[in-house]
Image (cartoon, rainbow, N blue to C red; front, side):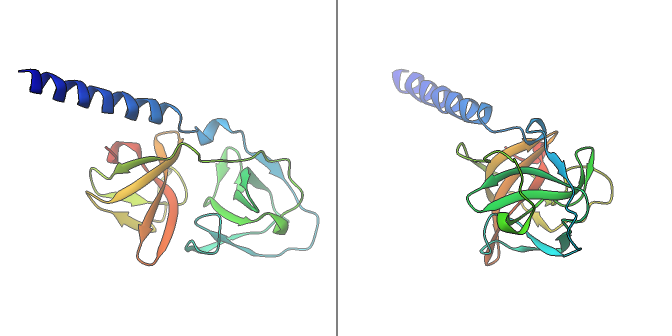
Length: 176
């Protein structure tokens, strides 16, 4: 009986740690992205699925800084951006900070990463929500991920896909 009580207390403690860590995950939709326009000539900067070239490049996704874009924040020498406006934007990715006009984006740290597992098969996309969003890869039941942030009913996660790590959005309901 004492052993079962200790076991129950241990699992309750683990649950509290998990809930505490989940509460510290940043909400990306309250970081209020900035809109900026660059007057320079048009250029196309590839978007990466994370803040280094060690991450996968997002297929067919670019940032043209001469067009409106939103800035979610900076991490080291990389900036998390998406073309469009805060109300409607395209794929979210990362570019080298030096390649975009001077921004006043705040520091974007994902210090409270939460290890989790995919509960049910889930599409990983670079655009949270919306219809007809291209799926980059499907994560499967049991795949390990790290939760970095939350946007509406989606989690911003990091996962390993083949040889390269990738960051993107999965439905929150698909993660345990």
